[in-house]
Structures are given as C-alpha cells and as structure tokens.
Length: 268
Image (cartoon, rainbow, N blue to C red; front, side):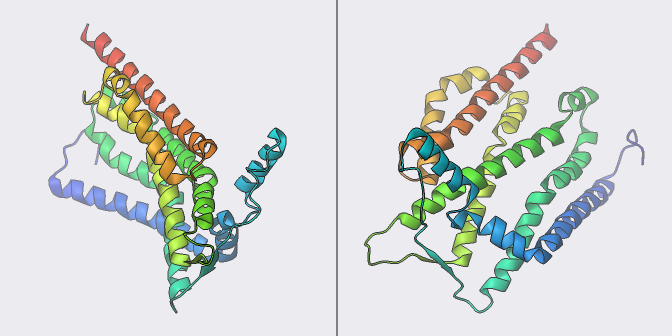
C-alpha cells in the first residue's frame, strides 16, 4: 500500500502486528545467540562486575596509584553468589538471555516502531526528527555502557561491603544479583533518553528552556539523590555518577532552546 493511500483501522492494526513481530523476532534471535554463548555471557559479562579484575576496578586502582591514594583500589568484594532454588540457574539463564536480546535488539525494534509511527507525521515533522533512530540508539547504548561500567560496579562494591555486623556474611542469591545489575543498567539506558524526551516535550510546548533553567537547582538535587542511591557514600563516586546526568540535563536545555528558536522563526 502506498504512503498516500488512507489505511483503515484494521489495516493499521495489521501493519503494527508485523512491526511488532519483526521486533520480537530480532529479540528472539539475539536471545538465542546469548543462550548458546553461556560461558562468555555469564562469566565475562554478567559476572564481570562481581570480580576485582573487572575493567572498572582496575582503572580505579590505576587512578588511585596515579594520584597517590590507595582508597580507590578495590582488592576484594566480600560476598558470594548462590542459587537456592533447583531451577534457579536454568531460569536465570533463560531470563538473562532474553534481557540481553532486548538490549541488543533495541535499535532495530525502535526502528520498526518508528517506521509505523512516521507515516502519520507531516513532511515537515519527519524532516525535523530525521535520524531519530540513530540518536535514540546512541543514547541508549551510552546509558547501557555507563550503567554497566560505572554505576553497577560501584553499587555492587557498596552493597558487598555494607554490613550491619562483621559476623553477618553476604551470600547473595543469583537472582538478586542479576536483578540488581539489570535494574541499574536498564535504568541508566532509559535515563540517557532525557534529551529525546525533552525534544518531544519542547515540540509539544510542555517544556521550555526557561522552565528548565528555573528548575536547574531542583534538578541538580534530584541528580545528586539518584547518584547517592546508586553509589557508595563517598563524594568521588557521587560526582562520577552525577556528571553525565548533569551534562544530559544541560544538553536538554540546549535542545529545548533550539526548538523554541525554530518555532519563533517559523511564526515570524
């Protein structure tokens, strides 16, 4: 059916069904690959932040040596992982594979959904959001990498060292560990979509650069609170987490100002 022809409601549902099926198929393909690459996926990727030889911990130790401080060097992670259910490891194998499939297939899945939405836009609107799939995917990937290499290792280190009493040993269930890791990584991927969200809210006239500048102090407090929750209670870790989020907020102000300027010029 050509783009100029009108589609009935059932035609729209049929088109959406095929877009969703192709997106789901991409998730399944990546999930199957992750399922059969069990050794690499679990030992290197999922369990990587649970070991002191993880990339982040090694770089922190190198940074500590450079500035002459041993405080940043993490020599041990005082916890062990267990599976307390008979089907626990098999269940986590399947769910982790699906999660990795979702992350890897996200750019294609978003492109498929955007292909369904974009024909309903005016030509001017389509030109304005050209390249949206690239930017959404880039920000999502940046957020995933930030969550995996920065937020998750620092949080795991904090939770592993936190003890109410020295006699209490931290023996975490594998489901709890993977759930925490997944939440942090996916949350970071979603938080990095802030510029895209502000872009569309600015287009709708809901958000303005003046509003974002007026609430900058409030946003900084919220960002610091989020950083404090995700990181150990030390200034260095909180600043490390806060800087990218502050940068995204300032970028969002710039994007909102650009949209407002374009709207002003078009109305003149």
